Image (cartoon, rainbow, N blue to C red; front, side, top):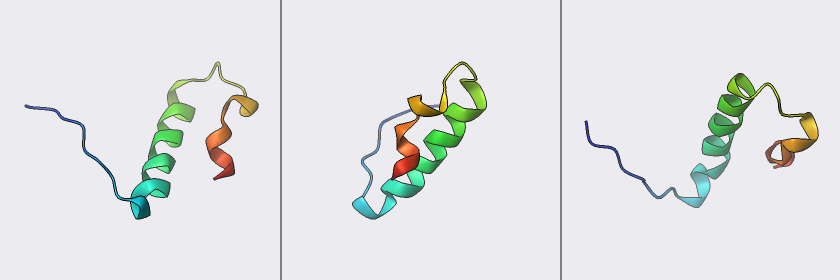
Length: 41
């Protein structure tokens, strides 16, 4: 399987950021809420 980095369009940013944030929250339990500035978008 070949992996690559895709560019996203401006209209996709919130959705991609939401997936990223959910992934971080599910796996990075050592982070505090104030370490997660993405929620303010």
